[in-house]
Length: 109
Image 1 (cartoon, rainbow, N blue to C red):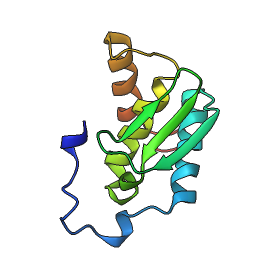
Image 2: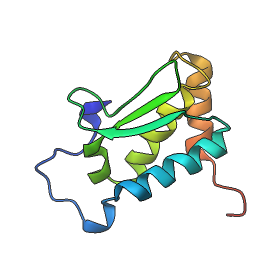
Image 3: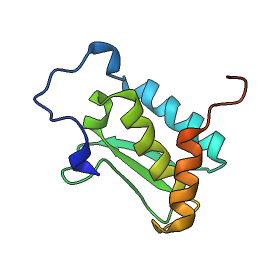
């Protein structure tokens, strides 16, 4: 997944950047929607991936993710939080991922 994002040298619009507190709020909002409860949310530099989820409920995101487009951030957030429900990348995981990324929040049409 790491290779799918923008190259770090490319220019990115300022409105795409997310401060850490806003990013954490986005993670918490998605956690509520997915009905999962991460025990810890961390943001730190990671060399090989955009995020990880431990079996103890710790979700970690690469600090570089804050400078990626909102749609890409959303995908990474949903993927990592879904691992709190489904550990593998099997059919169930892929179906849930697709369903959540293609659905709109309640109240929006």
